[in-house]
Image (cartoon, rainbow, N blue to C red; front, side, top):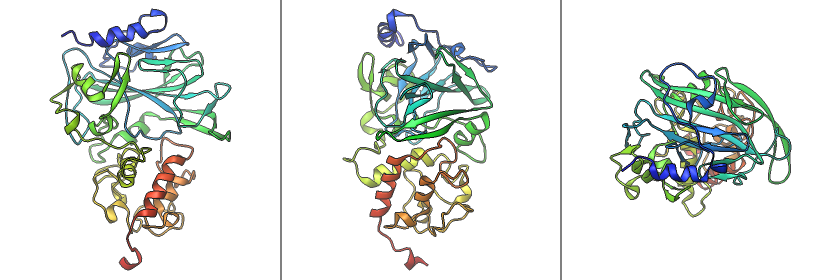
Length: 376
């Protein structure tokens, strides 16, 4: 079987005007100044198209980033594949390149964007029609012999290419929500150290790794150019994922907005993708004693009736991490609601509140049942 032959045909057929996409490459050393040098995608300012063999994917519940929309992709050189791991991200081989492109629907000028959950106009399975779209940045994670390297690229005003910004960048935007309310905010492109701050999920080794493409997060269907297919099945068929047992036996995280799923499952999966890369027994927030991974045991380590250890002034005057039945008395909810830089959570990646996430966690805490006073 020719690797990617079906995918390549679909992508080239869908490309704007039949324009040929770029050729992906693994760059072992150095940090290319332009995103286009990687060849993962190509833009002429009107249409952004993924290249042959670059496979898009999405998450059941995504990490919140100031309401930015994201197109995620993975690519590997010929002859290598990732090893399936049920409870962790696949063991991606050297040569893997993962991208995440952040963009907004425009609300007016390029600096006026819409901060809603609606599907961005111009979305296509293989890329984006850039009419009505503001491209902001594309982050690359590349697996080199020395380990994973994170590189942030900021898109130019013409939306034809993105330039490397290892020192990060602040982009001033105005967000308009579904009710027409406007809010000025500072979108932060992370610097290299901040990338490591999230992706170094083990605070001892400090080695960075991907977070999102764990099997449970990507076990879902995707509308590819050639038709809808399970994402893990597509990666397996493309030769990117070996020893996969099948969708039915692979864990699946909930969509936090899917009210047909149990409330506890939706809340725990939301906290898992948004918080657990730091809040786990070996993560950067290990001193907090707060463990928010989806399978953490229910109890004080999950925050229930837990007194703060390392919150400093970030408690909002509240006593417990989570006071069951009392969301307005819970530190966890306060830190999601506040925009105070010294108290808000997550510390990186947001400048505005995630109203839908706040509503979910408020409802979850309201329905928890425990007596913190009885525990002292």
